[in-house]
Image (cartoon, rainbow, N blue to C red):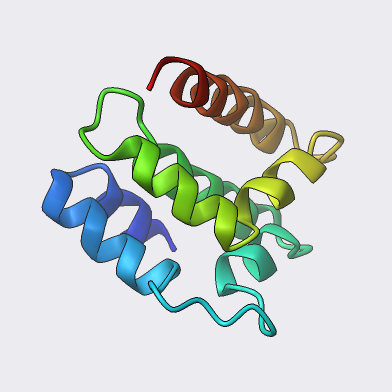
Length: 110
């Protein structure tokens, strides 16, 4: 997941490649995305890496960040992020705060 998080910090082409792996265009609504499963993991390092990946994907200054947020919403990732507000891991709490700010910024201003 850290590799995907680092790739997601790259240019638009890199971000789209990560999106295609993490949230396929034809998302299977019966089976949740592995990203949702990773966010629900008991392993805090996996949750942190997954949150970094999402944060890098939806960075507000990116060209297609609103499109990526919509895809993540449709896959149930954003709702899982919102459900994690009481995560016991301090690193997760910090990243969740940043993510929620970015999501609000994108939904309001784009």
